[in-house]
Amino acid sequence: MLDHLSRLRDGHSRRVSSWDTTGRNHDAWRVEAGEAKVLADLTGAGVIRHIWFTIGAVDPLYLRQCVLRMYWDGQSHPSVEAPVGDFFGVGHSKVASYSCAVLNMSANPGHPRDD
Image (cartoon, rainbow, N blue to C red; front, side, top):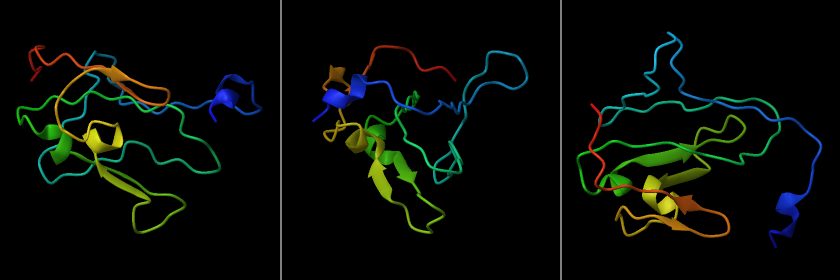
């Protein structure tokens, strides 16, 4: 089923990032409770091949509290709406590292939170 992933395809890559446009090293977006942020607003046909972000949160259930929504083709209702942990295969809301054929989560639960 996934044997085609390593094959060369026609097309080009694009990247969307939260990089610090001031030139400093503050590559982060603060998202308050109840607030939404647009991670990417792309036009045209394409395939999302990689999603990566870090969440700094005090709530031990943050993997269930943060919701990821994806909208396709200008739709008003999300095509994907799931808690971040569930979307990435961590439905039990426990921070842990794991890897499988299509997903992975790299976690360091003892790492101090950066404010």
